[in-house]
Image (cartoon, rainbow, N blue to C red; front, side, top):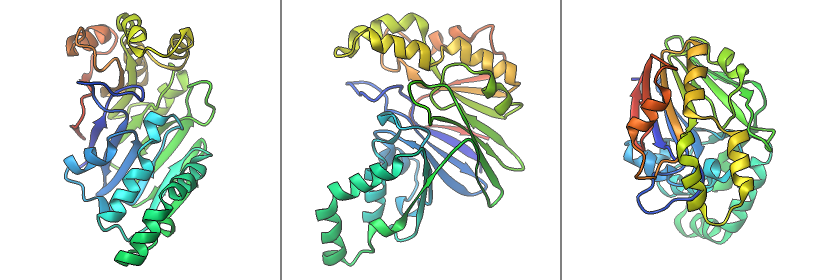
Length: 283
């Protein structure tokens, strides 16, 4: 049973009443469970999918923006309190090891206490942090995971990811502006999961943020992708299905699923899935 569960589908780190949760997903391929990105809400998102946290073994972080790794430490610590006693391998950009060391330092009192008072193994010994680069990330048990650098300035170490088995090919865009390289990377994929913004909704989004400046709009326009451009990328890549996620906005009641479909109409004629938290996409 191969599927991708989109746990959090909101673009950006903030949550507000009624909003969806930031980016995280679960890829279940060849019997392996792979968590991709750990934005706020990932732990409950996994539990809601029926995943025992103590079974975690593989996590990938696409880039070091908080809406993609803020809850990595909390997820691992909670898994540990839920019975985790086996190694978890975490793959991500340079600097992720600094985050993990800092998280463990911030929780030292609790971790030390639970080792002494509850007889648990040392959480700090269970994590293996791997630094990823463009190219092969890992290949094991019938799954090959590879990465390319995408375009998400000012970050450099920011990646799109490809997951291939004998039966399925799924590609995750990461956070990126439209790039030709992604078309080749996702060539003929069964599913492309791509970030998306609604062009008409951005001015209202700027109003709502409250503590940014025109720099935020500049960032969005140079570092992210409009829904219609994601649809064009999907068509040029020849993918069978396109799922939009990291939605900007995801929490504006003036916009609905229809707006996303309308934005892609005429640009992609395969199956279009507009991401919603908790949705399972069967492969």
